[in-house]
Length: 110
Image 1 (cartoon, helix red, strand yellow):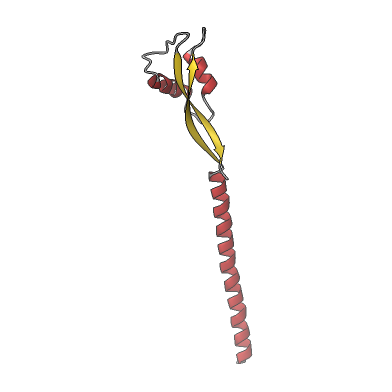
Image 2: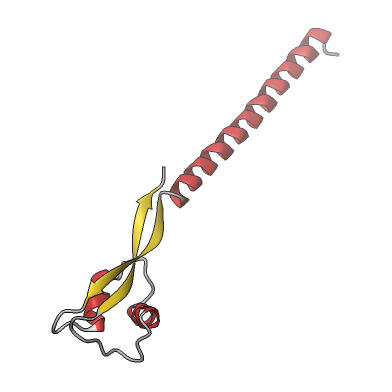
């Protein structure tokens, strides 16, 4: 039969390992949350609008190519948005006219 001292010692060792397991779980949980939060919120895009004067020889596709960003939808959808904003029935634009053009700007979030 084991002595009371050995039983108490074994209980302390078991308690120590239980506390270490809980602390490790909390540490890794916090670490994982911090890393995933940082990765998810490092960059945020905001949509802005600018006015562009159409120059001779400009096309809607050319202007769209200048202002579209990597985060933007595809070119066809982007041109459709420009047409909708400016109430253009087709892709025809005229020199001297002004177009409202959307663009995205990214801001780093810390």
